[in-house]
Each structure stands twice: as C-alpha cells, then as structure tokens.
Image 1 (cartoon, rainbow, N blue to C red):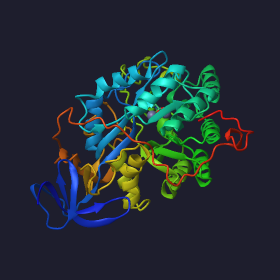
Image 2 (image 1 turned 180 degrees about the vertical axis):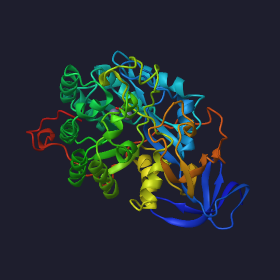
Image 3 (image 1 turned 90 degrees about the horizontal axis):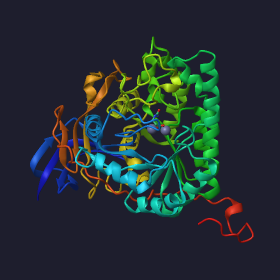
Image 4 (image 1 turned 90 degrees about the vertical axis):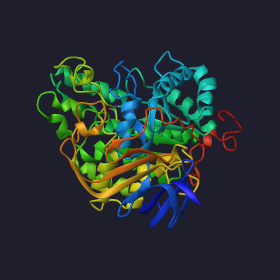
Length: 485
Ligand code: URP
Ligand code: ZN
Ligand code: ZN
C-alpha cells in the first residue's frame, strides 16, 4: 500500500515504549507502523525522535483578563508559537466574565479561533458567574459541544467563586463527566498581604512574591480538595507552585480521590530572584501563584518524577512589557496594578526536554506523557496524544542534539520578551505534523491560518480512581436523603 506520507526510520517514543519503525499516514491518521513502508511523500527521521505532537493544555489566548487587558497573542500568533515549540494541539481558556452567558462566551471564542489557528484546538471554560441558568442549562450545553472542563478561580475579585458556588459547579461537572480545574489561592490572605505591603511603601514587582504566601496556596488546595471529595467530583489543581500544595495533591491521589495536579515551566526554571531585577524588569516575571525558590524547584521536580503532576503546562499568559500590557498602568504602577502572567508556549517542551530528559531527571516516556499523552487522556482528546494506529497523525520530530540559545525573536509570538532569554537548550522539535500535514518543517511555518480545527472533547477517563461521596451525601449513610446527583 502507498501511504500519503511515511516517516522513515525514526525512533518512536510513546508514554510506554521506544522503538525504531516507519509510520504510514493516510487521510490524516496513523495507518501503519512497520518497516519498509512506502508513501507518496516521505520524511527521513533517521537519528531523530518521533513523539506525539505536544498538547499545550494551559494557555491564555485572545483572552481578556478580569480587569479588561487583552493577551497579546491571538489564535494565529499563539498557535504558531505553540507549533514552533513542538505542539500540534492546544486548549486555551474561554473566559466567562460576570454578566456574560456561557453560550455567548463560547460563541465569542469560536469567532476568535476560527480561521486563525494553525493547530487543532479546544477550550476550557472559565466559570465566573454560575447563575441558575448557567448551572442548569448552559454548562450542560457547553459539555454537549465538547467543552468538557470548567475552570474556577478561588482568588481575583472579579473572577472568584465562593465555596458554595464551587460546590455547585463541581456537582454539575460531575454529573456530566466534566473535569473541574481550579486556581487555588486564598483570596483574603493575598489582599490582606498586598494592602499592607503597598501601605508600607513596598510597591515594586518583587513584593508580588510575599503578597502571595505559600500558605495561601496550600490552604486553598486543601479546601478545594475537601470540596471535591465531599461530592466525589474530579478536580485538577492547576499551576501548583509549592511543595505543600503538591503534597496535598499526592496525598489525595493516594487516597483514591479523583484529584489531579499540574505544574508549569516557570516554577521549575525561575525563582523569585527574577522578580527582584532592576527597575520594573521584575514585572516580566509576575505570575500567580508567584515564582518561589530553589528548594521549591527541587521538590516540584520530585513530584513531577513521582507522578503527582499529570500535566505540565506553560500557563502562557502573554502581556507585553509596554503600555499595552505589563505597563498599562504606567511605568511606576504598584505590583497590584500589573497584569499577572508570562509567555512560554513555545518553550515548555524544549525546556522540559533539555532540563528533564537531557539532565537525567525524567525518562523519554515521562516526557511523552507530560508533553501530550496525559493531557489527551485527562481532557478527552481521544484521537490525540499517542503514536498508534487510528490516532490523528499529530507528530513532533525532535533532533535531540540540536542546541539553541533562547531569544525573544525566535518565539514567533506577539511578545517583546521571553522570561527564558539566554537559556541554552539542547533538543529541539524540527518538524511538527497536524493530522498528517506539515505545520513546521525546516524552521518554517508551512500551515495556513485556519488549518487547525476545533476538537470536541470527550469525558475524562477516571478508570482507577474509585472515589466516593462523603458519608453525609450518600443516601446509604445519611438516612436516605437524596440531595445531589
Ligand atoms: O499569572 C497568571 N498565571 N495569569 C494567568 C491567569 C491564571 O491564573 O492562570
Ligand atoms: Zn490560574
Ligand atoms: Zn493560567
């Protein structure tokens, strides 16, 4: 049989195996794995690693922040930067702001994404206004259109939900098989610390770090897990930045609760010393939760190695270092007035490969799992995340020996800086295919905007997570009261 495309002689790496084979691609899918396959088109991958295309599952694209600032990347520039960094699919957020409906929100993001993305995409819905209509009609409708993960915030005044609203969302999500995601930080601790720091004249970016104490994260992670356990709902704690938060995730997983964890590149590679750069430079490194310290990095690496974190993301939240972004409140704004977030969608995988695989911290199998496979399974991307017959031919071919020095210009995003400027990385994705089409090859973008398609996602696979409702919610042990589905 002649395939449309054959990737020849590559070293295929999946979350379970490494082996040399050809991949035969037909009609955008992986049709055969074998030797001596022939195709109308061919890529010689001898000496290269052939991995599942990366799935960037936490990024903010064409999204207004709670205070109205727009991210600098839209679906075109964001997807291009993601693709140059080895990704063939991404799942940005569609943010409901208060007063907006959920259907209206998803329609808005459809209009932003359609015709622009060069790789396939879905959305996680951010729920900031869980009205009765949202809970009973719009979340089920979102689920039906393939938006199967809902994020809530426990902090940010204009976005956060209270514990009761959080329980409502967890309960609806559970009943539909959706996954709730949470930004877990204690809002009161942060505002109390921030106000006191500013009142005492400590306004520069470095004070962003003490304004978000580690305890604010661990308290909120603990509470979020308790809320999820009460109703036996699956919950992913995003961007975990502290050993205490990670330990809580690990403990809950050991108990069999449906709890998942994510950490991000910046918490492994940067520290709060970066916030203490001269002048306003530290603003480039402001994200929430904030950067911590070297012992924290080491602890987070151990949790990554041990499987506490299923997901490793960039949390790409790009705001330029100018009046459109970080400095929109002027060059002397207090840390409270500076947009939170940093770019990194194009560097998540090269940094993880170089610092993780290259330095012997994680295996190639863990790299494949953290690049793509775990996100595909957790977020219901059924045809993505592995190299197997019948899967979409979403593939990244890596040269494990190519060394590069990171520059802002090479990111292909719409940013004017990268927090990883000057980093030396070894291992680089040289070819990226999406459904069998070359998106990136030889350092060039070969896809047209709009080539990426919306992917309706399925339920999270919860096999192996027994979970159980709190005894007080279980009719067998609460005198027969049926109060939650
Ligand atoms: O600082 C960050 N991470 N900004 C993006 C929004 C969020 O909380 O993920
Ligand atoms: Zn967040
Ligand atoms: Zn985020």
